[in-house]
Image (cartoon, rainbow, N blue to C red; front, top):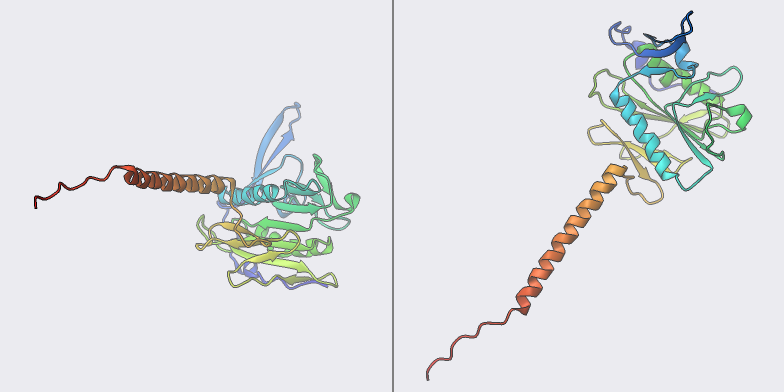
Length: 271
């Protein structure tokens, strides 16, 4: 059973601007044996079957969002040695399926060894969650994330797939969230957002949402309801708490000193 994808804007967008296309950087060996870094437009074929060392340029915002998600999940699961969080690791999904390198993937029930690729068939398990952060620069590449990979990840048995999308171009274009979850018959169903627009990733117990301006991805612990702070935010919150505590201690000490001062008595009046 397949699912009709909701994001169809990719089909209506104009052709790519030649000056605004995702770029592939790949090391190739020259006839003299020297290695040369070549820069070419990123094709759908390369995107769905990257080679070791491939890098594609999709912008700082894409990279920072991907890095934030991977870092937060690694911190969240740091005490569980059987949860693997990957970032740009190539997955061999199975016969007849693509061999992509998802932006972020979470795999349960495996060790955290140093893998060059993750072979789903050999490992005997698929990621429980995949997240793709979509770059709007190339219409063809964006279509792969919002349409083609939906079917591939469903066929590979990935329980949840979340797309952090930017349908419009521009560095400050807002994010949109779309999620899919496997149903009981192996089809993908849309994950319905809550009143705050967040998507619940049941496989990892985390809500994925956006900041009020929709420019940043935020995470909440589903068990506690608390927003998951980045290391920088945690340090800033701790510093703020310490400063507030020090201020309160100083105030209480000042009050205590006032209480300890001897009271001045007025001189007695002559009767």
